Image (cartoon, each protein chain N blue to C red):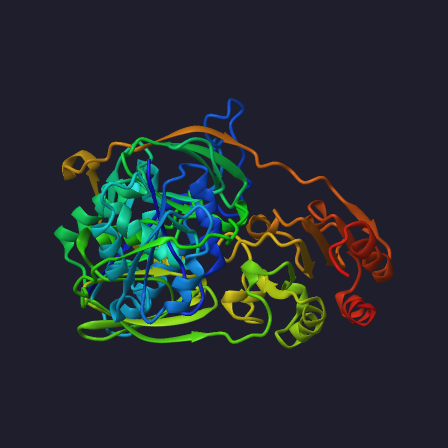
Length: 250
Length: 309
């Protein structure tokens, strides 16, 4: 079996992102970039399935600027067997990303595609479901447990209020939630080995996919800020304030 | 313009998020239809018939839709999408799972998690864990949208006699099968619907220590939440998680205990009306958003708070 894991290059989660001074977009000048944390979880799950002997090959794919090769090298160091970068200078919308991934899937024919449930930049939470829809594949989003069998995959999902377990026929789409696993760190020998692994680059135009944007970003602003409050000295003072000033408890 | 809202329910109760979503729809147009698909769900239909601003209900009562599998439900919505200009659902795990499947088939770029309606094609939505707010214009002919419930006050339920049309079920896709569900049973309100939320962070030190919060929650009628750090440490299940990748809450009172206040956590609770922070580290960023801060060891402060309520 073969697993495809899409990898997104995003701002490191520790970076506090601000709007540009003209509010036309966010300011990403000289900020640290990283693999989207949910994509790391997706890759870890794929690598563990390979280590368990259930999968023969793990392929990482990224769609973005040439710099995304850095994140693909990280993916290779973490255990992906080979990688493909679909190169484009424009930031594609989730629908376009899903269409590009569909083209890759039709070429590679993976049995399972594991994606992060959302990227921590756009917070859209769309790509996996859109890909499932375009391919007419079943989906299990927000996975916290995954059991791969020969023709099905059983997935436990995090839903509001609890857990749901589904059984999907293969090929299938799974998107990852936090508790699926704890990703490993790349070891130095593996980082060295990753430099020799295959990394293919294809221009997005070669895939013949419509990637025209459907939305316009009109502005980016800071959210309204909260006024700093006061410090209270004791629990009694706190309870008094909540009862008599804020009037939120009785 | 006409809007189709997809109702969220569990075949017994209509979820409150549906009312917030209808509220968002009223900002776009007053022609609003509600699609309700499920199984053996008369009590849901009874409730739905009272929702203000809804003109018609499309009902599909069939076993296929009992568990709201995205593959089957998306196909049903698509077969009824017809002339609707906007299709809306709550940005809950239900809506997030379903709507992109509809959007992709309509060849439309979905707008996720809107917090305001600027016009029929322009919306505001948080990005980067709420660090920034983007204003986005959609140029697609059909808009597929998920709505952040906490940003829209629910519509009232004083309506009666909304017209119901039965719609036909489709064949199941057969590629996805429901196996089981474990829904946490609790007498406390749901996190996203509670008026008061008390959350614990890494400072709680263990899952056992969450009983200190439980007892206060019971006295206040509050829900109990947690930061991602507390979930990652295994103190509590993931459905407690408040934040960018968990639940978004905006209660009247939010009490953050032993939570430092990472941006990803603030993303899930900073629209609460009153925020209280209890933390022994006076430099914790949570104090910058708190209306009332108490610098104290939570293991002495919580029992004191408990006995003073």
